[in-house]
Amino acid sequence: MFGLPEIIDNKAEFTIRNATHEDLPQIIKINTEALPENYPEFFFVYHLENWGKAFFVAEADGRVVGYIMNRIETGLGFIRKFIVKKGHVVSIAVLEGYRRKGIGESLMKKGMDSMRDDYGAKEVYLEVRVSNEPAIRLYEKLGFKKVKVIEGYYSDGENAYLMAAPL
Ligand code: ACO
Ligand code: ZN
Image 1 (cartoon, helix red, strand yellow):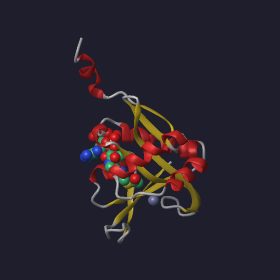
Image 2: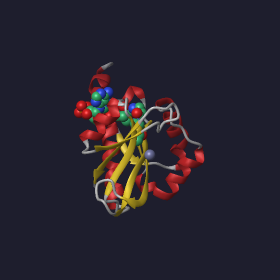
Image 3: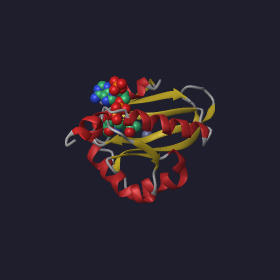
Image 4: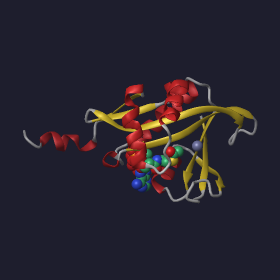
């Protein structure tokens, strides 16, 4: 029997649930490890308290291994050229050892469903580093298109793609 659970576990069991205040230390840790774009704690609290239904974590092996933090904005659409509610994917990350198991895709789908069904968003957008192939592939798999390049968007000078999809 020893060793067998690891083989069975190969596909990685995970669950997606809404984030809570108790999750914030681990969410902030994952954000710090995975991305150069980091934020003060109040920024996470602000999103949790305002758009908590669209803030999710992934749990595996009894701990939080990924998150998606979203917000809702009203403004000119990138897909529809009039004023719409837009979901904004502010930050998503999965711990390095848990990538390529479908967790990021599940987090994105849950976030997009909630932004549409709980908040009435008609489209969703995000910014991503032009060099971030894994994330760009993930977004394209979910129907996002590159809308424009934002020159020097990141603090190190890298450009961003603004990507958007209908909801
Ligand atoms: N290379 C190519 N395609 C990839 C890769 C990769 N390394 N990783 C994911 N994809 C694409 C594939 O199409 C994949 O589908 P497939 O496995 O059937 O081929 C699809 O994305 C779904 O992959 P998941 O396993 O669900 O993605 P994962 O759980 O690995 O999370 C994420 C993806 C969140 C981008 C992860 O790589 C990560 O945490 N990266 C560091 C943080 C980061 O860059 N976050 C995004 C910043 S932009 C923003 O936050 C708005
Ligand atoms: Zn953004």
